Length: 81
Length: 202
Image (cartoon, rainbow over all chains, first blue to last red):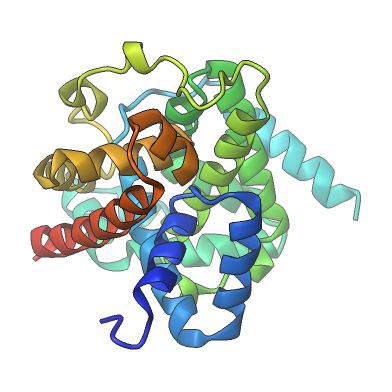
């Protein structure tokens, strides 16, 4: 799948998808993603796999008032414009 | 909307066939300033978002703040969402994850490279215990199986990175392993997780 992508670049993008890079490495990864559609697609695939890990976390209900808090803040943000 | 909720069978069809379309339409309505759509996005993803934020921050109050910031960012930036670049779920959970990790890294209580509460980490069985009533539970179960199938060393680096918010350097120090080993293990682990998930989805 990643035949054209050097292993260390693919590894950098995987780590970026997991949020595990240092700040200077993040800049490098972002530059790479912007530079090539192939690298961007590789990153997007990695991001989707990383986000899947989120689905396996222990299920806990958010506080009931959080929904209205978010909608209130969204209304304020919209009405400022 | 109400016509979809009349019978469980119709819901099942919605879940499997047109859910991504509905989710994209909700984001488009957010971009147009429709707060009802934001509420529906929250009803769909709020629980997963909160579970992720709570796992990363290990704090109920911080987790709620993270989820609020992420949904507001989604609301403000809905117009920039590009369906060709990924699912709505990935987009939203990534917004949540980035903010959760930033919160953990800013936190004064972060004790160097040692993840907070490592001793108190639940066993994997408890960590990935998902009750039956949760929407998306089939997918959650698939991910749980896939993670359990990974070699332990790979699963460990993925969890330390994504769920504990550690950088690769911090993981290397924490495990006492060379940085290069951590980097390759992370990459191979994520690719293998993807392959396993694709296999399970068929």
